[in-house]
Amino acid sequence: MVKRLSAEDRRATIIKVAKRLFARSGFHGVSIDEIVKEVGVSPAILYRHFESKEVLYQAVLQEFSATRESYVETVIADDISFEQVLRGMTRVFVTSIMNHPDMLKMEMHSQLEGSEASQAFFLNRWKSFTDYIEFNLTELQSQGKIKKINAQATALMYQGIIREVLLLKCMQPTDRFSDTPVETLVDEIITLFIKIIEPQNASSRQAKPD
Image 1 (cartoon, helix red, strand yellow):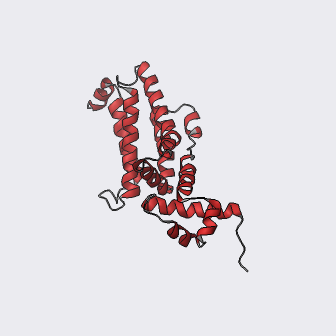
Image 2 (cartoon, helix red, strand yellow):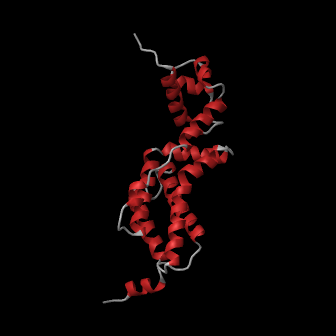
Image 3 (cartoon, helix red, strand yellow):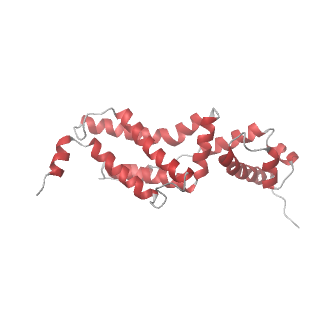
């Protein structure tokens, strides 16, 4: 005899399937019939848990957007440089997205479709990342450890480049960088970023031959 799922487990199963389908095709590209077929239930069962496709879509978006990364271990470590912290935070973030690519795809669909959840995606998944970078760039600049820059714009630029790499790897797996691991691309970006913000005299010293 097949064991019946509890209401909570059934709801979780519906959301899990809907995540995959919405990530692939967006809200308008998925029908209720397709969802219930994948889940293996009737439309009546689905509507017991979600009164409409819109409500189900919002539930999926809310679950995705509520996910936050934990950078605590990276940030509180003693005696490490900004570059080391930046590498650690970026590694945590990139690994999370690469392990759950549907999250990024849903975020893109929510922005294209004008969903209110797209703002929650930004606040929960990107803002703490860029805020930390901006804060540290401001501090380093006040200490004369990096060149004069617009910290807010520079942090946004860094976020945009990392985001582009993730889009490339998650949504275009057959691109010309398909043979290059995402870790390698990210490491190169961080190295270049650090060189861009370091003081001019530091770059000159490194360039001098022995």
